[in-house]
Amino acid sequence: MNIDLTQACPVLRNRTEENDREKGRIPVKCRQRNRFIPVFLIGVAVLSVLSLLYLEIDWLKMASRVGDIGVVFWDLAHLDFSNMDLILSSLVETISIAVLSLLYSLILGIVFGMLAARNVFRIPVLSVVTQSFFTFLRAVPTPVWVLLMLVCLGMGPEAGVAGLCVHTTAFFTKSFAQSFESIPDETIEALEVTGASRLSIFMNAVLPAALSQIVAWAGMRLETNFSECAILGMVGAGGIGYVISNSLQGYDYGAAGVAILLVFLVAYCIERGFVRIKKKFS
Image (cartoon, rainbow, N blue to C red; front, side, top):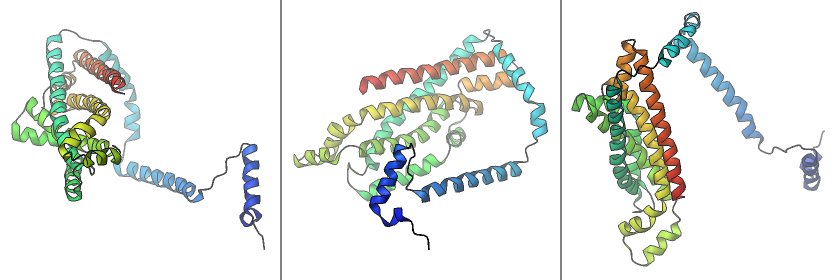
């Protein structure tokens, strides 16, 4: 019968681990978790193979069209500035849709995030119901909400603003609730002892403490909203996406290249701008 002395004698086991560290070896104690990694990788590989078989991708056709990718990008690089007035007006419309949807969603997100946070009103039922409702709203993708608003409000930027507001508000509700719940309970309890109301505690303690996180979430979501606006314009919500879609369908690659380049530049400026703003709040 073989006996593992390192398991039987704790002192010997500790010395063995010390020797392993001296030799540059890292002792691994959580073997069950490590066994899960190959199982997970095998599962991913199996699902990937099944997905490829189900989609029935024509690899020969795709390989034959790879060269066209370079041709299209070469055509996009020949920038055409003849329609700059239309492109710039559409770009301003896209930025306006992204900013308006962000501002409306920020206000609604703070209100509903206050209701969803467990440490503000301390009503578990209210928190669970609010979180469940907005989880459902987040589960539906933004293009679906925009298409529903197109049916209700008609073609135009109004549908884009309304559709983005639904999904962005649901996103902010969860994000802000988590930010509010990260406030130490000792701070809230100290204000409760003084007799302050729940709303007063939220406005004077919880909200100011979570302000830097709110700014970070807002910056990330503005960049996301702007990118989504460029896509949603292709389905009739207005903005730069409509210009890109029409230009590509009309083989006007030069104008589409200018519009895509402006989208990249604006998205980059938004990202860098909010990084600087967040540093000032930190």
